[in-house]
Image 1 (cartoon, rainbow, N blue to C red):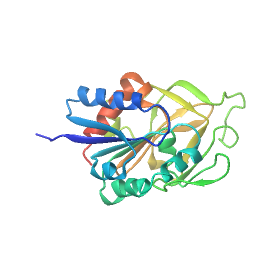
Image 2: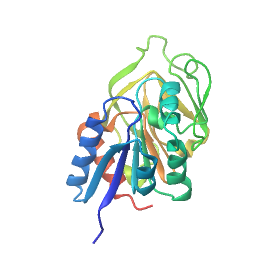
Image 3: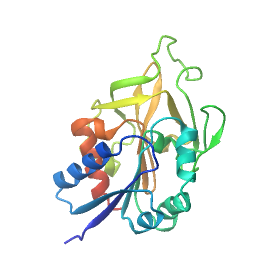
Length: 222
């Protein structure tokens, strides 16, 4: 029997994390997984975690600054992913931080876990329609690019998920894009490489599909 799984939701002053923690709790119950869910910014808790969830709301630079303001936290995240090779799930700007840099109010470095940049949705997307509403808010249909990824198990092409964003990641390597949406042009909806996955959408607001993704993440054997 598998023991108790320790899940840490990173709290660095970025948005309402209660809904994320509740969704993870629900996903663990649905999956029959014994898990403790801790909302914390404590680097030592990250060091002990089996799974880490990195949410993020607002501006890329603000989220990055919030993480950097906690001594040892960014190092603990890098250690979790690279040295310990344990799974991490980024949500919204949490996912965007995986990139090399974000282009929101200047250029700001990301973690360089996934090659690419985070750009405004409007001006540089090939074939984008000029009348797009920004931010992109609400439900959109997922288009699966890597349907065999374990975290996408049981998720169908066309399933609806919930977005709220004005910036999107442009990945250098198409293999790192697990799913996209069409919003005037294709936009990255989900990325993955090695032990990390991230969604531009909010799984905690995406009802059954979001819970399924979180459950898959908790059960993921890497």
